[in-house]
Length: 219
Image (cartoon, rainbow, N blue to C red; front, side, top):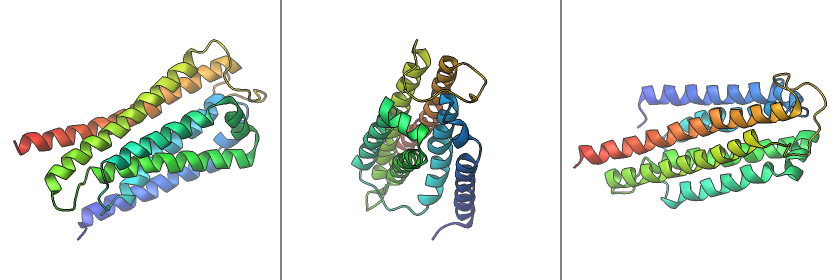
């Protein structure tokens, strides 16, 4: 039976996650993203690094136990989605077409939810060997989040340090910080590092720490 405190936290996480999505998709970022790489990246990070973990905290309430391979598989799908949508052709489509942007955002949200949900659910173990399964699942979930943090950090570094524009998207119109096109791209890379990489890193370390503390407690 779900504890009332846990139920309230899950409901708050759901409301907060849906609120973040509404602000991201109904706010100024989609309009600005056509001319601003940084605005597009801010939209991306809001969805995958803020809304997705909040929604996952709610959706994993009373979660069905996950096999250890599930978070690993989800992290690989997320890797493919993120890098594919930052290739010039798909990135340009997302910034020049409402349909392209909707498809990209749906893909990002689905992939990031899969990572967070499988990572959190795997950490809860189940099916008999609860404690050992929970520790192993926690480490598998931590690995998936840390792997995601790593490839987000790599992409952010590539974007931030590139001496030329990487994507063939229009640069007309206002940028997020009033920068020129290259400076705007650099700002977008920093946003990926500071938001995406850091939040996934924190989540991975939290799951790993919980699993390790569980092992020490039962040693």
